[in-house]
Length: 589
Image 1 (cartoon, rainbow, N blue to C red):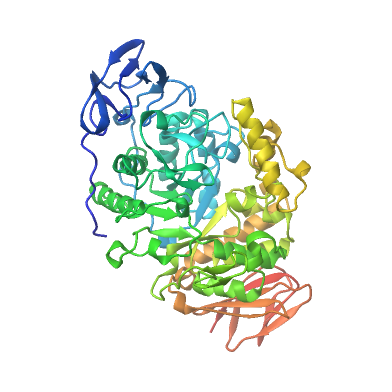
Image 2 (image 1 turned 180 degrees about the vertical axis):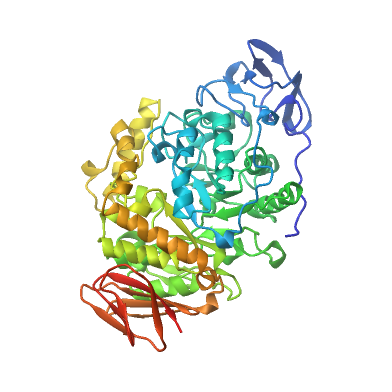
């Protein structure tokens, strides 16, 4: 895509000297390898030293006698968020992926994982050992939850503070490079979850340096990131440079941008538009496919429309309407945002159109929500899931769908996900119905902060009717340990049966053009609320689902060939005959 040219600040620390943006400081000292060097202030609030940066340098900044503080752009924090930074020379790593090219997003099957709980080791190197499983499953893209430095040794990563530094407990910069290089060697693209809408409370020293936040707006996390107030040019450059660093220096193939609906940006050029233009320019420079995926609950197609069409130029977005419609039908839950869903007609709309709410009234919000999606927008602009870290981990006890519904309904969920006209995403362990929950966990070193997080979590869930005493303590080590995957489950029934089902569905999607067709006009859906069946037609393919506790037969015109069946009793003749809670994939003609 053509767009605005990238415009990196010439004073930003892209050269070989130590520089830091600190317009609020009157004196600033660089502490490096035990030496103390006074810095000179240049225009626009940048302070620079003649000292040449060297790999392994340990350094920090003393501001008006206070500190030293880590570099806001620290590439490594080997001793955590409060300690000195360490310089990383990205040219010293030997990559083996010179001929790597990520597959198109339209052909993707994404697997979301959390480094700390994906394996017992909880490291980048430990995760490498499980990549063959993902290849065998049929995964094309690995999406890694945030890995930037955060407080403590364990956490989800969404309270990070050193956005340029891979977390030391996972293996630091070298560990992440080894992981990405290994993924590419296994023909797996890497997507990285990044958080630009807020930063964590512990180790967040950005305000000591510059106006990275603004009091003009409030967010659920406090003051908003400064995207349109005084000094915002450098703040916006900070986030865009961070995005480019992951793609350039760590060879990541794309970024998932967390909760972009939380951005408050009244600039003529929104941060997302600026970032997408910069990434497009880097893509042309590197000759590699790069993508940006936004998490947003706005149901606003402007996010994924091209910049030429006055959109933001983001490649794809998470579509929660699909998850909510599917989850509420399967579980019958109606609390919170599930109030707006629960009927098969909602699920049919989600599969056919993407957005369930596209300018129509929302009972949960008590207002209209969303905007109509133009018919020409292809389905690959949407990433959909039956489960993800949010929808599991933000439950009181972190229950997976496998804890809530029958095996038959799990297979229905898998079939509707893998045959949709959208990009499917699986959450770690979903493919075998893992028994382990995914609970919210932290390891804040500040005991007061840790206690506040634990108490706040209980208060939050009390509002939803859950017993506060049943909410796991995020600070407890057991909460983290319970969330680790148990890989020995995959060879035992019923887990092995569900795993085989996912493998078969993913393989069928890969081999069948109709199931990869992103044209939403060629996806037809019918349903019967009382009989509790839904039928999805993708050109010459049909996916028939029976959610009822009784058998159902769905009459269909044409000769039918059964391709996949979730239960032995499924059959086809002049109709599709489905046992209770079962699904069939059939070919017409």
